[in-house]
Length: 267
Length: 267
Image (cartoon, rainbow over all chains, first blue to last red; front, side):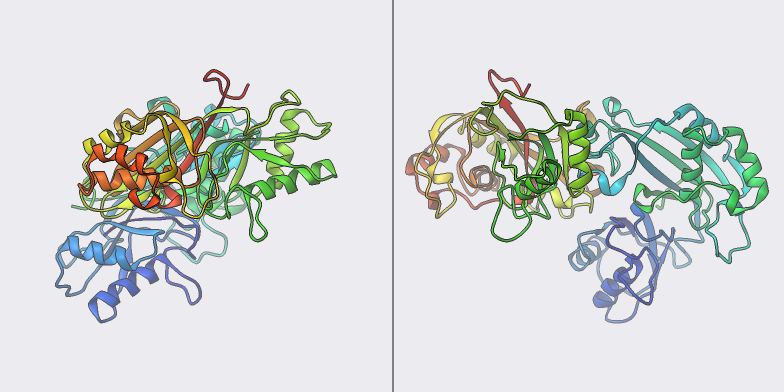
């Protein structure tokens, strides 16, 4: 299943003891259709407040519906903040997380005094000047295979912290050349509020908890002139969370795409 | 003041005995800055749930702040769902409603099975085929000076029901040629959900209560083949609300622009 969701109303992807999670609601919707419990695996375990336009989830069950009917049935049951975009039958061995070869996240910063009400829930508003060149230079230094321990959420018990970043790009969203495939959340009405939209896109074979948000917090410090772009190497080498910047807010982040195989998205 | 707001959380523009209105919140914010009650006049009295990207409001008070500081102070006080985009000093005689020469509304229909979570609050989702040519033909028949009594909300006590429509156009939103000035709410992530976005834009010297929404409900009936485009004249002549179509939902509608003088927007 390919999914889009607004992260605002949820405690995150993962089922929790308390609160509404995307995974939990999807499992409930599938269980209602199936008449039996169904476990759902997500490619990316997005945090509370993080959005998705291209999350992928897999589940194994004996449904008798064709994929189009299954999608309709799921969308009829799920809250409007979660939509199933596509459903595909996959080989029984397919696992949305283990088989993912790359995930792409996008972060949107609205750089200006105010932000219009239609974009506010999907972009981090930052006033004051940001040096885009410095941010872009810092961003490039994340490309490659690195130990990202310094960018892992404090208190995490994860020990395998090496990840390979294949793309790490800061850009200014140019509405005039808005891409043919639509604009991301956080940029729909960017013409209204005079705030420049700065986007950060990162692709990697995997991500640690808070990794993208901590990278964004660190890039913003570079943009504010409080950190040299060249310092990124030292932060990575330190493996010290305290050496990196603050964790950027969740609501600016969006899981854009999950890839399987050689750059291929899920078939 | 030029304003954008998400109509979802509010009881509409107009102050009510109960509930949060855009006008009421703006008056409260101004009163807090001014230290005295301030009355605010809006160009369009948008219904509960109707959005605005270009509402205009006027108020008379002796503020000592420059317009940029006033805008900042208002945005610091108002909820994020309401943003003041611009503030201008105007002649004392200026009245946002009485001086408006035209208002432009846009309605967005998402024609498809499902709609992504980012656009769902800003577009009316309709499944089943819609004949765009029939809708466009019907829309053209509203241009001109007509008695719109048949398109007035039932129970309204308004008696002057003649209005002059200068533009009434149905179109399919073409994301590939997305305009340089951004996309309207309801279309940000139209690439996700496979639903075609049909837009209706209408400009007139004034609007009756529910007029745009009743026109949209009628156009949709034409698009569904349940009404001939040529029947619009007879509906207008009937002056009978029962002759027109249903009132389309509020959340697809947006007040886009208010014009003052010869096609000029507020100076």
